[in-house]
Length: 138
Image 1 (cartoon, rainbow, N blue to C red):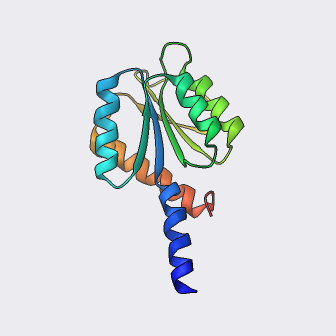
Image 2 (cartoon, one colour):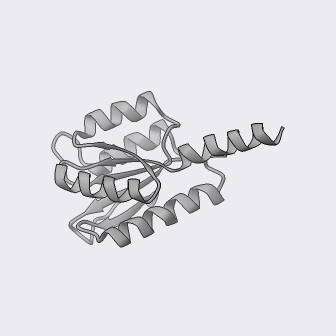
């Protein structure tokens, strides 16, 4: 029975540590993805917000966090975040913006773009911890 419980717990933790990053800057996507992978997260990255939306729509419970740029072609981050929360309201969404005065939904966390890797990982860890403590994935 313990083995079955451990397997289930590890399986759930895998999804708790799964993140989607969306940004139209491929260099930034690569940098952030690699840093988060090195910190133990499973990361799916997209430079096209429409493809990210479709992927999340097809896998609504696979991720616990979405990090998206605010200004992108085809779809901005606020719209993407809103559409994603319609699919799965338990997801945490972080909007990255070059503008510190971005006004948005209280359900989104804001992060000033060109954030340091240390700050990014810190914010992600905090966001994931809130997910776990609020029971969003269990």
